[in-house]
Image (cartoon, rainbow, N blue to C red; front, side, top):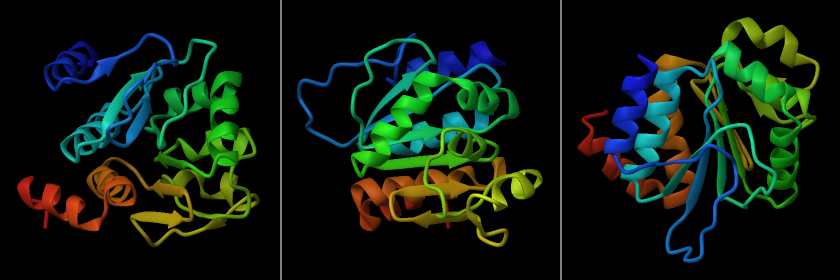
Length: 192
């Protein structure tokens, strides 16, 4: 299944990087980095990346290696327990998230990925949501919302899980490209 996902990603003109760094000499559009770690929830990864691409956002898919972080308008972290644990224990991800937060740029995490936020001390005290089983782990550091599909608190966007991946991607698209563009993309995808 994983190789099929990568094949479909390549057909949709995503750039797959084996490491985090990327050079954007011409910033003609907004940029997103979607972190793809072993054990990531494929559906959350593909849906978020695809919606952002359809919105006209320059999407870079990155692994967990490399040593020269580049700035992006948003860092997107798909869930999946294995991928989320890998991001939570990665010093590179911690550095990237701290740089993103201090620069006032967007961070988006879905499903189990908010555990990486907590692990690296990102967005403490903010309103978030996650996959329900992580509520108790996150309540001590965040203001937890267990009713909303997607929660945005300033530059932080979080969501609950696979069934909310379309809402998550569209919220990120709206934050970067505007609500009208996100609605246009949703309509073309037959999302009501």
